[in-house]
Length: 214
Image (cartoon, rainbow, N blue to C red; front, side):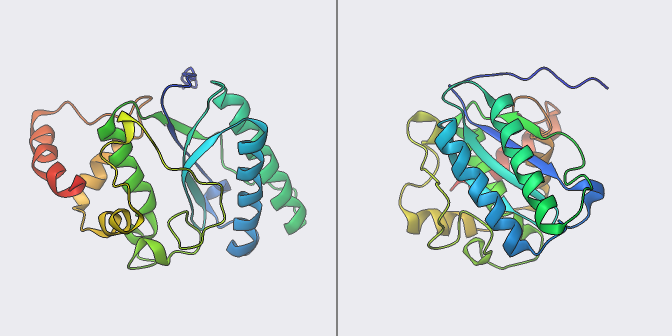
């Protein structure tokens, strides 16, 4: 299947993700992997003026929400993933592919989309059973004293995301129904994040949205 055309914009943020080769763990300890990703994120914020809103590193993949003021997501991600790959290969002393393929992306073009996906991304370690609270995962922008160049979203697109740190953490840790999270995961497979048009699914989503975004 041909890769879908990349939609370039400076108006909306993207969710991007990629898995390691064969879904194996990265070749080096996660703490060292985190350091490499952190330096690469700092590099793209400097070189491409990227605004990074959230980042989570897992054992074999990452999630990131970012905005590209220069409408150049393709260049940004090529630079980012090449740098990460080369540094992991150098550290591990291996020549194997680090990532199993190209990154996947989805545009977040509404307040609902940014709120749903931000919570979904930062709850990934909780969903995986690694921690009980989002702030307890050490390889996440939600952890206290995170040194990543993370910015807060401003404007109408971020109107449904709590502004204060305390409220934000409480909101991220509020219970989430697994069936709604599955729908969010499916929505992120689309070029523009959106839920299924199925009437039964729409009813479920309406019922659970108030809980998820409250």
